[in-house]
Length: 106
Ligand SMILES: [Zn+2]
Image (tube, rainbow, N blue to C red; front, side, top):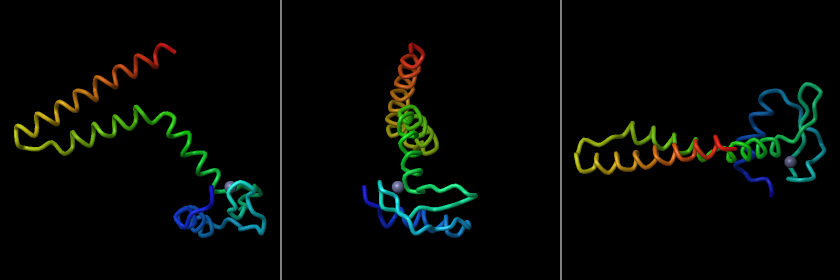
């Protein structure tokens, strides 16, 4: 995957500001310039992508909990609307319980 403008803005600019040194070598995987910080050479973009990948692996439960919190924080006053929210929350909780059981079996 080629480096996007967003990644340059969000990853490379803060790195430069934090004092990391940009080398004139490039990452063979994504084409980002390599950086050196505390004597360690690394590709910030690949490291970032790797981190994202790990998060996504365990995100089913996290996403559900996040959604549940979001719903709980925005409960409507209208009773009919509220009923819909509560039904969805109930479904999410059921799903979470199933998911936990699934995890426990491993
Ligand atoms: Zn890279």
